[in-house]
Structure formats: structure tokens, C-alpha cells
Image (cartoon, rainbow, N blue to C red; front, side):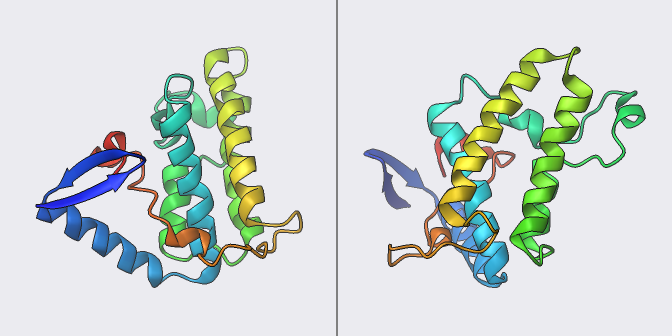
Length: 173
């Protein structure tokens, strides 16, 4: 059993969870610099939603493919945030702009399909989009290059927890 504190909350991790965290961190360190920065943006977006917007944004709705039959009639390039995460974890993004383009496609798809049908989802997407933009600007300059952080730690050195589709996300692990 391992004790771990975060934001004045104390969590107890069993050995399996501790080794999952260690494995996840090792995988992250094998990624390209671009992928690690993209990871930091996406995961800090998830963390911000989990901490401050959990009642306003159903994050899971953006982390799985849309299941409606007529979705493909409207959307030619289906993508969700889990696909974006998976692409980050295999260093599929050569540039920050490619990453940004995929995330903007998620927002665009939501707007195209949900506007007039599921207006509450559009409101959630707009909130999530603003959070993402803020996190993106913290890591990247307007031209897509990484910003020079005055902190000694790189943004991806921080532990943001697991992505939201992993069981431990609700607990902040």
C-alpha cells in the first residue's frame, strides 16, 4: 500500500495502481517532445473539467464514438478525444497544429451534428472548447510552437491522472 497526497486529499493506492502509474509515466517518456506537450494539453483539460466543471460537462460524451445511426450522414471524419489521446500515445502528431486540427474537428463535428438536436451538448462542447483553448495557450504559442516556460518543470512532468475512460479518473488518480 502506498500513500499519495494531491490537493490536500489523501489517496491510498494499492500496488497494482502504483505500477499502472509507473507504466503510464514510462510510456509517456518514450514519446516525442511534441506528443508529450500535446499530452499535457489534453490531460490538463481533462483535469480542469474533473476539478471544476464536472457538473457542467459530460466529458465521457466526447471520449467515445457517437452511436446514432444517422451520424455518418452528417459527419465525414468522425473523431473523439479518445482517438486524439491514442494518437498522442503513439506519437502520431508530427506538429502541434495537427493535434489542434484533430481537436477542432471534434468540436466541429459536435456543432454540425448536435446543433438544433442536442443543444445541451453544444453548450458542453463550447465550455470544453474554451477550457482546451486555455490549456493549449499555456503550452503553445499562437504559431503552434511550444512556449518557453519559466518553470523548471516541463508541463508533461506533472501527473494529471489517467484519462477519463479509466476507472480511477473520478478519484483523481
